[in-house]
Image (cartoon, rainbow, N blue to C red; front, side):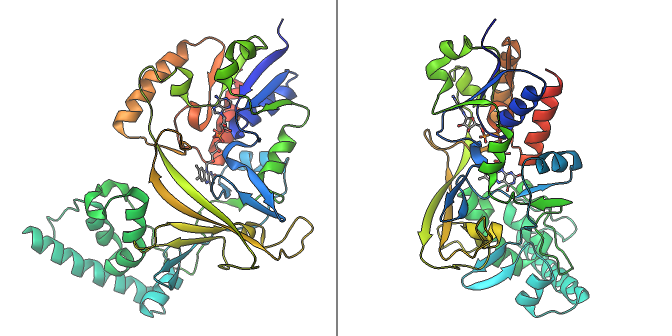
Length: 383
Ligand SMILES: Cc1cc2nc3c(=O)[nH]c(=O)nc-3n(C[C@H](O)[C@H](O)[C@H](O)COP(=O)(O)OP(=O)(O)OC[C@H]3O[C@@H](n4cnc5c(N)ncnc54)[C@H](O)[C@@H]3O)c2cc1C
């Protein structure tokens, strides 16, 4: 009989939810992480009372009542609503595209005026593009992201709010990107700048780390421990493994490496109390090298845990970049090549006895926080 029933490799949301639920079922669980902290990518670090989202801004949003009720056990969520602002060469616009955006862009007042303006721009641009290609308006089919975006929202919104930002995100001109990247561009003819359409939204008061700490109460945790550097020793400790690290790393990359997209965060503490007046500001021109600036204090309305105003601030500039070895693997690239490779790894994983692969890296799948929690709860039901 081994010391633990389960070893969870990774103290991110997947590993921690599984560990919590197994412990509730009376199992003995050990959680390890190679990082020196818990919470994986939702980790928040407290700087002067500000919970800094170390691996990128994390806003909890979900339509899943079961998951929403689940997380309430571990934290009280505030009423934060994500309403990003776009900065185009000093002109500020409300996002996602809504009546505030259209009023600022064209001075229109009513939804009908906004709709007419968008239609007028779309028609004009589409006619020009069709003429250039030598086809009729009816025959014209967008062939790249630029054409697709213009055909959906017209020229002004594309030029000021989409073109530069998308170029920075993908590292390529919109004319060189495939049209399918933008299938829809929601246009709201209401004064609603709530970015997410989710029923439930908020930030755990006191930060995500405190929430995860609560989930791990009474569970053994070892940090700064890399599974692969101590594999035999760790396997000897537990009957079964829940593995949430990269699936290709588990198999020592023997079929090749899976690719990721990454972001570089340049974080700075400033001796001012209010840098930009909003948590998220997107820089939508192509000259500014970063895509966004996050001002972390506004996720919790500028207050510390005692509800006092914080005199300083912390900002993070976000730079999109191609992933290279050594970078944090953030977003799986779910193109044909990588999906195929992942399937081959999945076949190997299914043959692995007593190991369950889960989470964003273990399944090579983009999960939001709510969906990763749901997937962890489903995984536990099967154990
Ligand atoms: C930039 C960014 C912004 C995001 N914003 C949002 C948002 O606003 N809202 C939202 O709902 N979701 C957001 N997400 C998604 C969210 O981060 C994920 O859903 C969640 O973190 C997934 O949890 P996980 O446990 O699968 O993975 P992770 O959090 O990555 O946890 C995996 C853990 O395994 C550890 N590990 C890996 N290999 C080993 C090893 N060999 N030995 C020991 N430990 C190991 C890692 O150190 C890591 O801590 C965002 C993601 C990113 C990248």
